[in-house]
Length: 317
View (cartoon, rainbow, N blue to C red):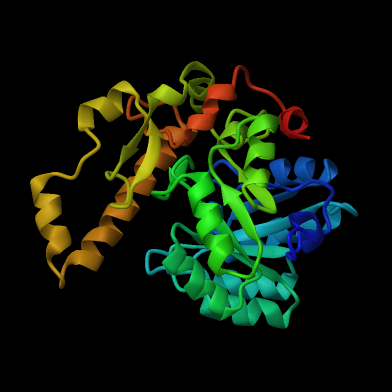
């Protein structure tokens, strides 16, 4: 226990307070297997699998490889952009996973159904209002997504967000964003987090399922090269400021602003933008293309070469 709250080690029966974060296109079974061998937790986005049958097969494979002090989970997007989230939830509950991380929507159904199967549910939140809402729904922990996170990020710094959530929520807080070294991990824990979710340092891993060019970009670029764009989904997202990103810009065009303010069209515009944006990201992540939209956070500053997941985890433990 830590300040009356379960630690991440206690929540998931792991040896170290680390989750290898779920990353669109990047995370895969190979990464999670190594993480469990190192006695930490790891998570894969359900959207990394085109079909629920492939998701089911991945979960079954991970169950066979589960270690005594390792844990694995699935990340589910619960807003309207993910048309398959109820099917993905059913597969997770039928097969059995250690935990589910929810993002970008109302997690009530997932919390209720997962708890029937003894599955822990952690909810991404970016502010106190969201934190209180999902805590009241009964989730097991909050993942505090701060302004140093890679991909979709929050507006508050790690210390401020953790402090706000701890002051008003009785459940454990897991910090996401801004941890690229053991020193930063210890600092975040000192703010009152019970564990950390670490993503960007693992993009340039040997096991990651992305192109060599994407991995090498994480080695070549640094924290000062990370910018926030609204071009992918309409929600602020951090990417590497490649020549292509500089060319297309990071702000909404005037017509996108007008469409986003139209109540009747807003949700459809956002859905179409999300589909196009994720397609651009997928093409850049898996093939050599001049349209390089590489999602990453400022902690790639610590990435100096492509290494195994095992070696990267050793930096933190």
